[in-house]
Amino acid sequence: MLRFFRKHQRLSFAILLLFCGIPMLFMGSGLGPDGPAPSMRAARVLDRDVTLGQIAALLPDAPGDLGHLLTLLEAHELLDEAIGAGVGRSEDPLEDQVGPAGAEGLLHKAREIQWDGRQLVRAARTWWQVRAHLEQIGLREMSRPLGIDADAASGLVRVDPLEVQQLVQWGRGQVPEDRAQREIAKRQVTMLSLHLLSQAAQPSRASAYPSYRRDRQDRRARTVSFEATAFSPVEADLSEEDLRAHHEEHKDLPPAPGRSGYRAGERVTLFYLLADRAQLELEVAVTGEEIAAFYAEHPDRWKRVDETARTPEEGTQEGAPPPDGETPEPEVPVRTLEEVREEIRAELVRERLDNLVRRRADAAYDAMVNRRPPEDPARVAEELGLQSGLVGPVEREELAEAVAFGTLPSEAIHKIFEGRSGRWSTQTTCPRGVFLFQVRDRLPPGPVPFEEARAQVVRDLSRERGFAKARQTAEACLERVRAHGWPDGIARQNRILAGLAEDARGTPEGPLRIVETGWFRQADPAVDGVGGSTVFRREVFALAPPEPAAEGTQAAPGALSGVLSDPREARAWIAAVTETRDPDPRGFVEYYDQARTRHDQEAQQALLGAWREYLKEHTVILP
Image (tube, rainbow, N blue to C red; front, side):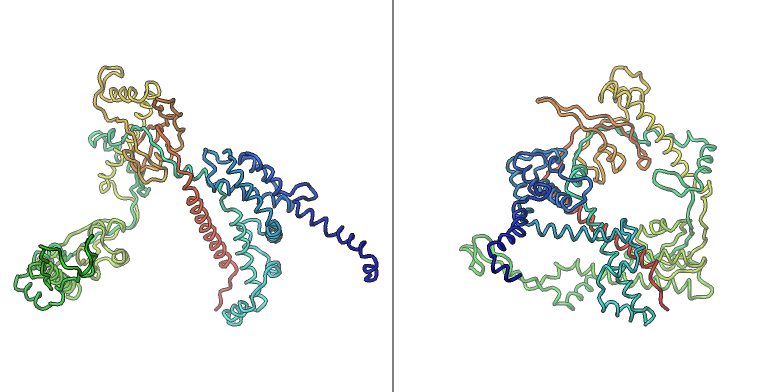
């Protein structure tokens, strides 16, 4: 063979050129057996002004071979680059026109992909093979990795021997080495598959842009509110039979926002003693001699702060003598007694008050717990200057607000509800003072009797009937606004509510007012003039915006809503969108980054949750 090549050098060179040169020619020209390579096809499309929709048309519906996969990756890159560069300005970024400058940028991106084609092909092939292999062993869905075959997992990944030995040692020799290797392999393949599947589901720029417009769009609305309180009957209009029937209907339901309910949890009745700081502070006095003595005993505390390092005024130099005619004020090295008198008084009062509160609380605890028989609580409170009272029955959530204005520690509440009846608690400190509690009575969970809940039943039934009347009035008002427009329709409804004819003259004062809201977003916590109802914001953003107005005219409101109602707010509305303001496209990049971050966090939580369930099912609990 070697002799043949030496004898026929020209023929050998021709054969070598035939086998090696032609494939290199195809690679360099971007041609393949099926015509131009995908990147060249994309570049040809971009040679003229095109729409992003035409670029998106390059995406295959069902990618199969490597060429289709390459086209898919390139088109995704081009589409993301175009939207990220801000060429999208209309409602649908896929329909925006790309001008010459945008087309040139996209063409440059396509050429970058073509120049790095080998790496792209290699990465695509590797990713595709790994995904195909994972699908073969049953990882098509997020839940499937939990049932992965151990043998298939062991053959797919390389397991670090050190990890195997660590697992064997952790198992105190009861985990065989081959089993440890399979367990580690299953863990690695599970995490790899979940990572790939979560990455494949990451939001693209095209899919995130409509969400960006929806979340960041501002709207103004015209609305009329129908509050239940304006239509609620008074207690005299509610019969005793109706009140008892309402209580009977809802006695087994727990209370909830916008709904009646009279089933309570466990409740307790408490007697308490309180060393109240505000009350005992009246017994604390500080004399002028004590203030002067404290001032003299702590001379180092009253030195002035060195201000020589402060920035000199503009036009002067640090350390320069004062201007002519000005005499610098002499600095006093320490603050005088008059300057710090109130500061010292407050410190002495606070210190003495802390001691007094603690002494009174200790004396009360000694009288009620350590003495046999215990002292009378009312007499102890009177002698020691403590507050006392009976609270309840109250539930766990109501106790802190009932006795300590919401400042009672949760640990104290837990001890009260878990302790025995008749037993005094330990001292409980909160910003109000020091408490002692005694549980007098304990009621199990169950319906609250009608007599005890009567006041709440009156409020609930009045609210319920007022809300129904508000909705009924809103339905009638909506029809009048549709027939006569906003101002006239509202005026007609106010006349009817005032007992007048609908078409009577004049506009009487009524409960209905047209409110023009300010700018708000769907995610805002509240809307000026409306409140914090999520129902209102959601329904208003589902309405059609107003049509663009002709030049020199004012746009009419958009489509009228139906009757919007929120039982939590006990209110109904009718509304129409008067103006919309789209978000700045320049903010999309930051929004998209945040969306990807949220997706990664959710994917991580899903991965951890799946792995936690996997461990629950497969981990051996060793003795």
